[in-house]
Image (tube, rainbow, N blue to C red; front, side, top):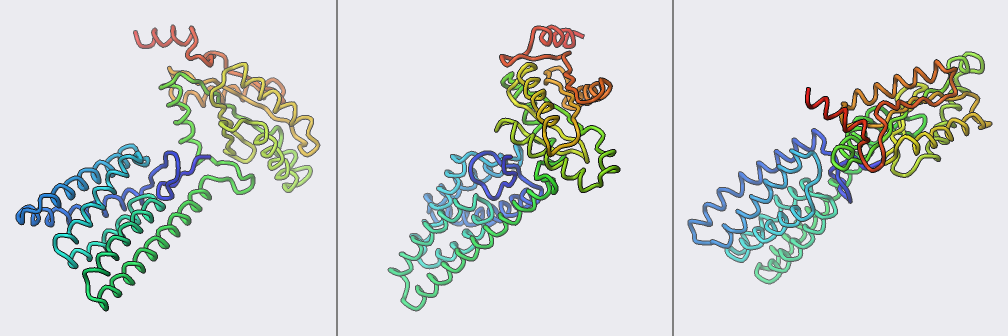
Amino acid sequence: MEDLNLLSWGAGDKVITTFQKRLLVIITALCLLGYIPFTYVSALNGNHSIVFANAGFSIFLTLFVSFSLITQKRAPLLLIFLTLLFLLISSTLPILYVGQKGLFWFFPITLSVSFLFPAKIALIFGTLELMFSSAFAAIEVESPMSIRFIYAATFTLVFCNLISFRLHRNQAHLISISVTDAMTGLLNRHALDQQLQRSWNIWKEKGIPSVVAMIDLDKLKEVNDSHGHDVGDKNIIAFSYLAKSMIRKNDTIFRIGGDEFLIILEGTNYSGSLRVLNELKQRTFDSSKIITTISTGAASISGCESIDEWIKRADQSLYKAKEQGRNYVEFSKNWESTTSGRSHFESTHCEKLNAN
């Protein structure tokens, strides 16, 4: 599963939370409010290089935050790099122009960067800024004052990043708990919408189909009544491990109810997914650890329907599978797709819908 935490940024896109939106807006507003008056004063004093650096930082910071808020994903690394580059320049130039007074910018900048940007990148930036500021303080500032500054700056950098890393780790843990089923360790319904949207977007943009398969453990209630809920739970866990071991790396399985599961098979078509689902049905039937069978309803994605309609077709197929006596795989073939894109039936039907 892709990490859902924006502030622990590593590789890949991250989803931004409501808390992070507020944090981005508040810190960005404070940064701009602090930089605009200082930039104005620098312009009056003829310090055009500071004005240029501050203006560049303000522009790239605005682009960085706007991208994150609009797309709800992490900004590109190039945009992050340019923002921090202009920030580094704008934070060091005042030291060269006004001397030791410019050193005080280190503290609010370090605090802001540790919460605005990826944790590891913020640490690297803070270390570079600390090295430059400490070198200037050691050369230009009297000994007692320079030692105090270096100590305070080092403490601020370490403390901010420790708190930042801890917050990131705790938030990642909380998000993981919220989207994980406690019994099986599978993703739960809370994580389902995002993954469905992702598969839908891949289909719309690239024409690569996906299949949704809804699975029920047959007559699990009877197992619970006859053998006890502990035996029923063992069946659920055993099936979860079996299904997870059989799907591919780019497929995703969810537990969406007591005996209900959903699998998203990405980049596959009717024949490919039907083969996997039939094998899962057979291996469940043959397993000595699972005393129930499974019924499966599947549907391939279509560009002419919504996500809800896609799920509804899979759900309807599941009911048909149960009507067949259970231990059965029913596939909705109305919108059958191929791995090369939309089928002829889909293209024709979509054109009719658009014409109407």
